[in-house]
Length: 138
Image (cartoon, rainbow, N blue to C red; front, side):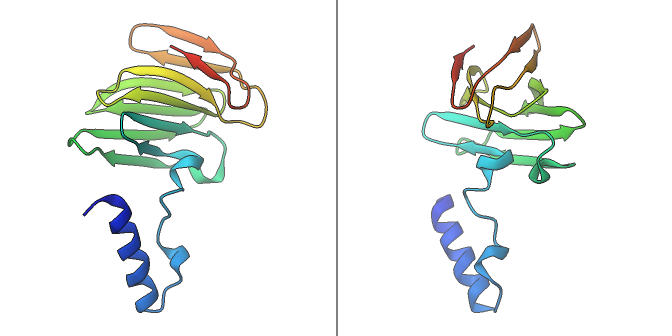
């Protein structure tokens, strides 16, 4: 059973026992502050300060069995893949896009205005200032 079918069945079950469909997390929730896997990439949506990210942690088990974790702290979030830190993003909202092995590909601005970010990778520090929907290669 794929994730979409699981989500459909979960909503059906919730409604059959009298719970509102909104009681089941929507597949769209990841866009606020979470992790999402698509055909070729993993998307890490970081929104420090947003209510959806307050003291939050997210975990995704990918189709190939790898584990992605995102943990929010005060000013940002730490992103790890199979217990290895990929990046820490501080200062604002952004989407880090990686390949299926966790290699960073690009950063996308997801805020309403330009963000001033610090990205702490294992081997380097980057300051980036993405505007809304701006894609910046890494």
